[in-house]
Length: 382
Image (tube, rainbow, N blue to C red; front, side, top):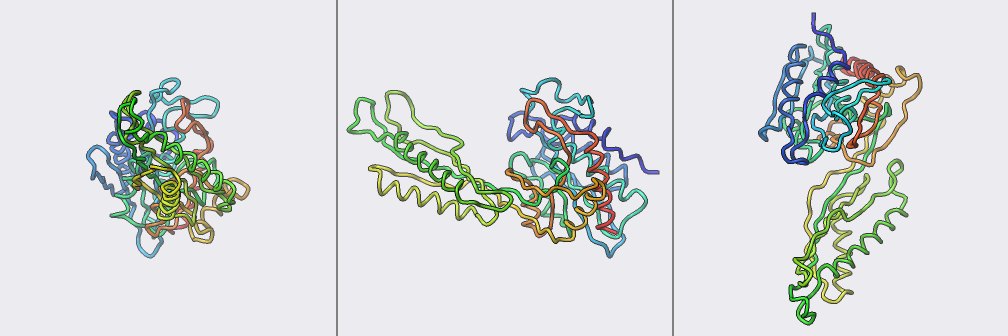
């Protein structure tokens, strides 16, 4: 008889394990301990367990229940890392239950989803294998650069996937992407008493900041995507200067452009280059260097895909009404799965406080997500 698969005690265990992403918070614990726990839990329930750890101390776990053949495979994907808890109000690693909620760092984002998908996969295969493979991907590093899902997709694929990020029991079919760019506005260093020799890079950069604000207004008025609205842009970081009595030789601005389906990093680069070219032509002494940073594509699911039809039907049956279809302004690993040719959706628990000083998940919703995922896996892989 396999061990039980109740998501609530599993969620409590996950919250109690420190898994702060060290790329966001130097000294963070990383995913080793929580990945080890997930590997043991899934192994005890008969899953074939793989540990992927290209970056030491940053493992992902992929657990597979092999099918008997002839069925469709599904991947349930959720991230193990959390943001820091330095300002958390209370004890972040001591889960506690109050008024139907469970509190603790990661309770909402997204150990509730990890617990639900692990429990659902275990339940769906408890009475024996389905025809298709059931793949549980507990991944590292989603909060920073998604190195975990990228590594998983080098070795594993599936006919469909569900990412169990929190979605308030609604089904997410689209989200924004992002593209980061660094712009170095170049000046000339000189003593503060010699304006004839110096070029103030910070003052020149002001023209670019005004142009970015103008671009943001144009985007806001463009209409944009039917669910997501328009893309956005802002200056996220700025640095420059060496002292109050020195003309600054350079000013660096990091720009983030949030993209919607139909927009690409290449198009964003051209957009920024056009602004910078205009400033070079119109602002005396304006010089710059433009460099691309990390970018991630936006995501949009096919509402007629097999996984969409199964999940929406099972969610409607469990909730008693058709689930709300939503889109997210933030990025998720759905985009990586979609790019790899795996049709996917995002569906997860209700709650609040992601990245905040108090974080919680609605316990009833965790059970509902588990039930809906169990039925979805069973139907899809049968």
